[in-house]
Length: 341
Image (cartoon, rainbow, N blue to C red; front, top):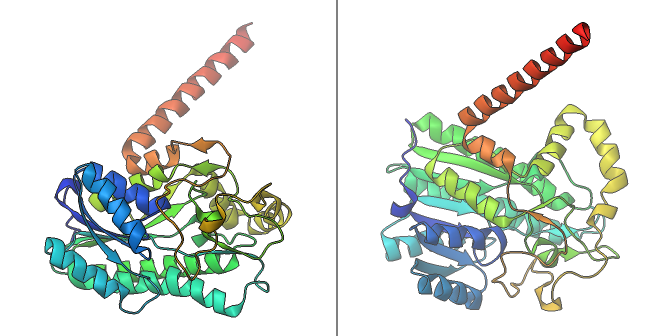
């Protein structure tokens, strides 16, 4: 059965990890486009401040303080949506936790914590969302990463968890499709996005961390998420630079290993600590939120041609064909002039 997806202006959207980065950008865009939102995050003060700002802009917002590592978090978020709006139409599993360091440097407890949030939090959210959406339809949107395809040096636990999220999302999709449930299941795979990710990650390196360029605007991730809430896509990549790493890992895995072995560390070391000290290391405790973008001083791309092509594949194919035909015609004309010159 095809997925039943409403226009955004008629939707209630649940967003975890909603007070910073991609989650905050998604909440802002969703409200601007007429959706009602349920914001979930650990920090109550941040939730109240973000909600007040969105309501002042005309948004309809409910909040639920929740740590996605907790077993009852997803149920409480769903109940908030039911109590506030009678239910929900799209569930976005966005909350995440991260570390910088080698596998040996990161303590086992921190490996587990990354998986509790990034994998088990997504699992619990997906199961609760599926239970509520099976009959009426809707969308479950999970935040993976290009690191779902290709591990990044010094981000081993995060990469492993995002690999697991990809498998979980595929399994969930097959189960729901097999039941004939009208639910779309999408995996979003961002590249390096200009969010407070390096500030929030627990750092075991001997230098400040950063995201490897090229960096993209978190608004693009929000655009991908909200597009998936209305249009069923299996997956959506955000950012061509990250996609090239993913593609390289599939087509030339040993070469990609070598490149990351030589460039992975220097590309992830910053000249100075990013952001304010109070923002750092939110692995176990929430830190001040409210920031959509990070504090790294890099050029940020505000457009992703790859994302646009995935949103409009027919138009992209026609455009690529037109460009190819134009180039072929020009090449043939050039050869003709050379022969007759």
